[in-house]
Image (cartoon, rainbow, N blue to C red; front, side, top):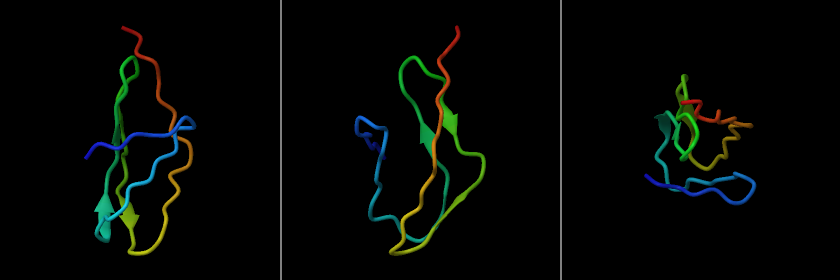
Length: 59
């Protein structure tokens, strides 16, 4: 699944079935981010992941 953020980095993923999910984020020049804990998605609710900080690649 590919989702693109807006200029503030906000994103919405719609149409997920209820269940547990993990998140992966990649962007050129930054280290990849993978969530360590499963996110519990419930039907008809929004889940705020807070701020996810990507670290610039050092190599």
